Image (cartoon, rainbow, N blue to C red; front, side, top):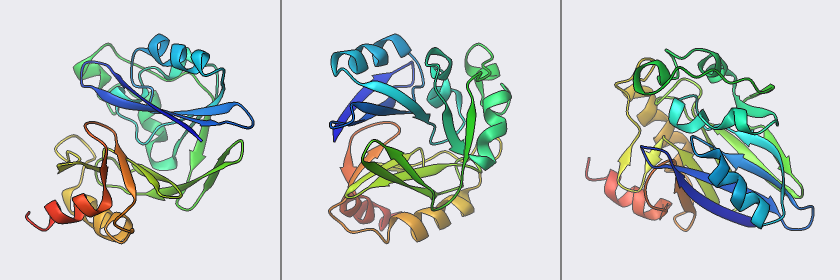
Length: 201
């Protein structure tokens, strides 16, 4: 599997490219900004992008969607965020943004295929109602649910701290220690490290 991290935008969002080496197809997780920068990496790897996966519907994770003429996969509870600049916060923090791509609804337990790569969808609400994490074997993309040294904000509209902690407890802390965590912002970490610092809060 090809895995590339690109840090984009004013709030340093982690965008990830997941590529199947055999099929030469790739998916883009959270192209929040600077799509030309993302596309250059894809071209350098000689990959064909076939889908975007948004871990949630905030502007800093969806802002580059329209550059790529491919379907956007997002949890059904965040679909409205793609079409509403107030919900996706772009009306507050940037220019109002509406996603124009074809949208595919996701649900808990769905399996997304990129070539021979299978990606499991975990619904982890709290940061937004439709926040998701993505698991590929021992690799875990946590979006803005949890970071190397923190958890997602819940002070934005539709955030819920109690729901977020429930998601972390039931979907993330049960995972094996050795799994590598690729968050929506900040450094790559492990489940073990997250478990250790969460004990302190």
